[in-house]
Image (cartoon, rainbow, N blue to C red; front, side, top):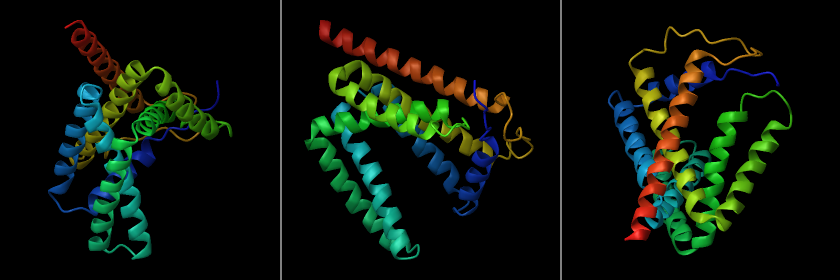
Length: 221
């Protein structure tokens, strides 16, 4: 087994730095939005699949367009907002009407999230390529086995968003401020990281199981 690099410190610094740049009430609003979207993906992802495809396209394309506009305009909020909305609508329409492309992208995103959570701490140079390859492989697999892969992918993405929302709240409340993560190169994961991965994994399995159960019941009816 390779050497693990604990990402807890970087995660906490990233969370707190983002929160400090937001209005005082917005971290809780952001956490609420992330949790709402995450639970929607996790438990109703395949049942509302076309809506989820459109929402995924909106979020991904909107984020990329807003980031690009921010880079070009040196962070002007109005330009980023307009670009985010326009890019989001284009992305939503693309994935909604190009169904097979949407299945591939959403499956690949789910595979990427799983691979990143498992392999991001590896020190070996092959780890980034493995993460990318797993994402692409799951995207192709989603085209062949749409229902089970999409149920797992949407549950995985939703669980990840939900866990991140919980971390935002914990960071804002200061419950992570006294945490002393392990040094880089530690051979085991920290308790906090184990808790994150455990909660994410259990929620993912629960969401995927309920989605598959609901779709089978609907087929029988």
